Length: 335
Image (cartoon, rainbow, N blue to C red):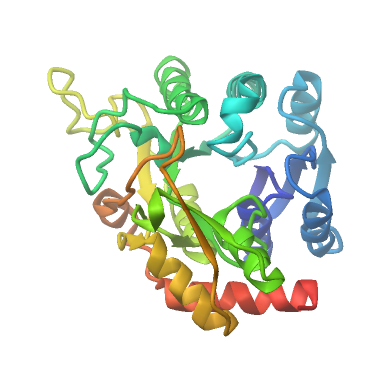
């Protein structure tokens, strides 16, 4: 297939592009390689993709409507995976406009391009952050997600609503994927595992929020990518069981689905740090701090719908995933 992957220089997008190329798909990567975090890491990911047969690359932002339109016109993708977004919960308190520009305006451009480009299936990144103030665990895709606690989460919820509108009005098959705390080799430097590893090796204290007592459904990168591919290959149709009198938020009478992709095994942050200490062979100095604005105490994915429809559920334990990250980090940074 011809697959357009936005965010192809990013953590998930670069690994997904590799997997698609390995199985023989043609991939157009689309990314503006911005400076939200060190662009050198993004360029290093790209450097692994650019020499490969079947891979092309467009350097532009989602907000650039003409660039998006040209990419679709020239490449004529059959399927699209939209992973490009302004990420990060805490940064959304500092620069909310960046989230509207990329996650709302940019996603609108993708939807319009898919509509006019006769795209067979749009898969897009949502987030576990949409569960917001929900305290019922595990998080189920049939649960209400109407109480976001960050602008990042609000834009991801908006993406799901926008996608449903296009599925309903224009019969565009869309699948939203709520990712749960992705980690692993080539990961994002603004996320906990990367920050903690750097600080422990530098002998610096860790800022441990919520006194380390919150839990996260840490999900290994290869498990995430496998979930993306499984859903990409399964084009949704209208849900024959959908009842408009008791509507299920995760499906529709339109060709629309939403899934959680998480390990279904929440781990307390202190245990996560303990595993990292074991892999590094060093102890961490910890500075205990309260829960930060926009953060939630716990995340825990119910993946029954994903397993039912694709036959897949993530399985990599943190002990394995953290070790693989540390091996990559030491090799990449020479520490």
